[in-house]
Amino acid sequence: MKTTSPITRRRFMNQAALGGVSIAALAAMPTGAIARVFQPTPQVDEPERVGVMNWRVLQPGVMAIADLSLGGNTMLVVADGKALLVDTKYAYLAGGLLKDAADQIQADITKDRIELTLINTHHHGDHTGGNAVIVPIASASYAHANALPRIRAQHEKYVQGAKAGPSQLARTDAPEAYMPFAKAAADASSTWTEKTAVPKIAINSSGHTLRLGDIVIKTQHFGAGHTDNDLVIHLPEQNIVHTGDLVFNGLHPYFDPSANATARGWLESLKQTRKLCNAETTVIPGHGEIAGPEIVDTQISFFEQLIASIQGEIDKGTAKEEVVKMSWDFMDGLGFEQVRERLIDGVYDELTA
Image 1 (cartoon, rainbow, N blue to C red):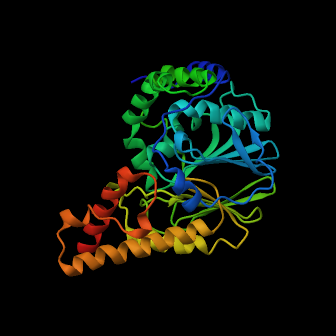
Image 2 (tube, rainbow, N blue to C red):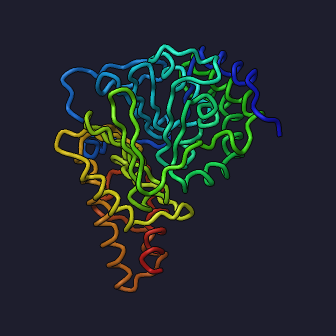
């Protein structure tokens, strides 16, 4: 396997500067459910949008992308000529993320390093798929210690995802301007090694605090929940919380036993996350619309009811095969219906272990 060279990286960055990329929608959200379940922060005017990736500006210097068709939600913070990026979506979107971050701080992305810090909220591919593009050029990159070996183990998936990017993009109605990023990632992927996508700095369970100019960024880990490496990103002065996939707004949560997912731990992590919020907090979920702390409350209620409902069926002696086919009122109208049975199956196994 070849190692990444400065020439290849520079070539990639030059190509990536031309456009961006998109992917097919993850799931369809029922129209009625959007109005009933999604709880967006009230806006007097249409939010300001910037960049190739159409970032929504939350506050001066803080912006986010919340689009079900583009993988996990991302956040970008800029201050004093430096940038912080939370999550990297997929390989063929990463060039767009990088270009927008560089434009915000007026940095030259053809250089080997820019003042960009990356934090992964957890290891899943729709949040780390662009790491191989971002990590080599970032001045610092972080993830929870448990995420690092998991990210390394996904090397082949990242490569295959990058190679498939242009053809997948061609089958969508995404802007043609995105295609150069997809092609650049596909070309560069042949030079990636198992280490290319792995962040350089491990965050342990006590969390970590860093500064970007006058902006304080706190990362906190509350134990296993969605995965065993979840990080919550908190900007206390801006009153913004990025929950990673601890919160799926208006959607069935994805349950991954291979990542040590636990419903009980998830519930506890949500309760700890809620303590970071007040009535005015802006909450960026892992998937779904940006909203306020009510979406954390809704996710807490969801898991409380889910655990109670499944435990009730276990106590009655209902066979697992029947339970996984069930649905309850609190699940009505949620998107990502395709993961509902997987979720119930995983929680059933946890409660009967």
